[in-house]
Image (cartoon, rainbow, N blue to C red):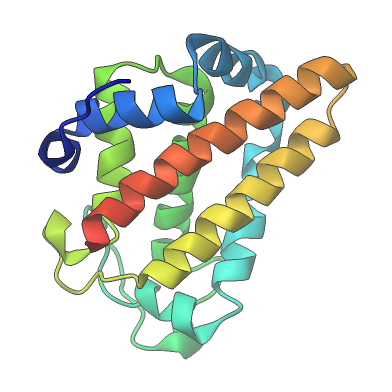
Length: 189
């Protein structure tokens, strides 16, 4: 039986990641399967980003989080929900971030820097990251990760991969998104 330091799980993102990866079974082979899927996912990232934002902008409770000025954005800020749309410059700015997120998943080494990145993805959706106006409720973050999971699994299913490789890739993405979800949830405790 392994001994796990529960306090360290809460204080040390790398330790937390290693525990989750081991427990869930997210292995270097899973990371390699995700990276090997890059030629299939890369051309579809724009479509996935557009679908994600179409969904986010379809609900007032999710769209309202794009009214406050986003960190790093220097352009015109929408005044209310009537000004939010897929072509608004601040939405384009956010779409660029999601685009980079997908690229990180398929193109980055799963090392300590990736762990920090996964943790920051969770943190930036809360006031803990510095912008007190950004406070996305946990239910909305869960919905977003569920949507992304479904889209990624669909992308794998629609790819020309053989059945065994497709299943391996789908399982790898599922494990990774459970880890990502935990790195979101930890900032809501």
